[in-house]
Length: 115
Image (cartoon, rainbow, N blue to C red):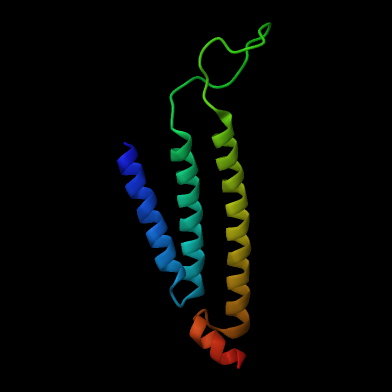
């Protein structure tokens, strides 16, 4: 299972970097989304997926009775998902604004218009 996840993470990173090296700004935004998902999946795999119980302490006890899952990777991934969605929304707004002003999303044409 870990080998399959490693292959998926590698493919997501490769596709994300490939998309970010394209000329179109929309493809750069899609590459950014792929990279953020690959990073989230990498954090999940690095933490070691487990089927342990949720870290909830019953009333009247001070420690959980059974082995529990580590909540830190889940909190990190949830935070990363929220931040990546915000960054992606901001990037989409910027792409829309560039397209409405310049009429193109091609990076080479944008450089020519800048000169």
